[in-house]
Image (tube, rainbow, N blue to C red; front, side, top):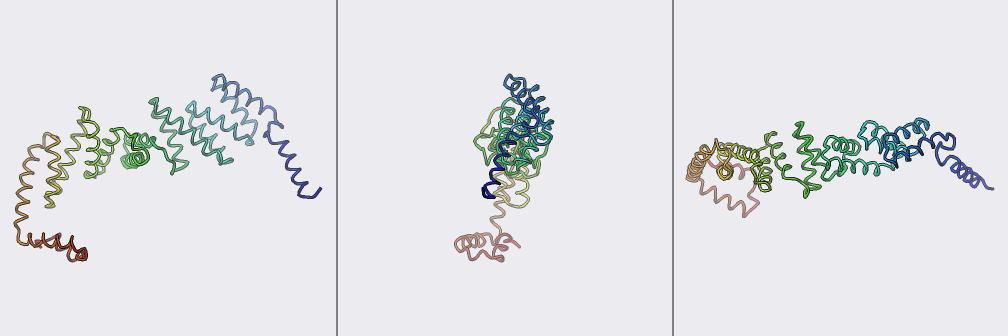
Amino acid sequence: MSAPRIVRAAVIAAAALFGPGLTACNPRIGEFEERGDRYSAQGSYADALVEYELALEEAAGGASGDLHMKAGALALRSKSFSDASRHFDELLEREPSWRDRVAALYNLHAQRWRAAGDTFAAVQAVQWLVERDSTVNLGPLYFLLGDAAYARPDYDAAIQAYLLGLARAGGQASPEVYARLGESFERKRQCATAIEYYKKYLEADSTAAAGNARYRYGTCAFRMAERAFKGEDYEAAREYIDIVIRNGEPVSQLDDAELMMAQIHAGDRSHRTQPGYASCEAMRRDAHAHPALHDRKQRTVLQHPTR
């Protein structure tokens, strides 16, 4: 027999001898695992997990991937997150090919716990997935992460999670996602963006429960109107103050809103009668017709016609 054939025969013989793992050398491993399987089939998951743990101890680091998977799955089922993480991390360190199956198990439990209203457990499962793979597609589970971050509150994390959820599973977003996005952007002092999300929320929910969002929507619009008015951007100021008046909130600022609308009209008329306004408007039309006129000097003249 040639040398390659001798080597191949030796490998086959070794695989036949040691293929079942260390069970052939230590029958106690198989006994513990078999008892664990029986308990698991009967629904006695705590007892099954004890047997699998004993089998892993006997294996002393040489356990099969199946045994690690069984122990990890039962630990996860019982919400023993640290034990589940330990089993799966050991498994994946030795056999990375199990990664998709483990991730699918975590995703399945996260979905179930979310549906059952166990937000804490669902978030634990989702966080495990994200920590092991930052590019994982969580679909609607992003909204769960967003809710958890919003409640802490961590508005940056909430915004990131909600936007990923809208990008990956926008059709499954509840109206509250838009309200919380609006408030998160408002807390970050980004009222212009907040207004857009408050508007989407109010379009989806016009009930009395939307009162807080309606108030925040009007408050943001009033702030933006003030800012635009001070910058003499009367068109933007008019749009924002119109939101306040049509929205009817905040009630305490409706009189101020109507006064600002009158000031906007007066300021706009004054601006239009300034010397050079007509020629400036002509230059704007020329600039749109001839893009070549959009050099730095022309933009400066157009933006500051009275200087």
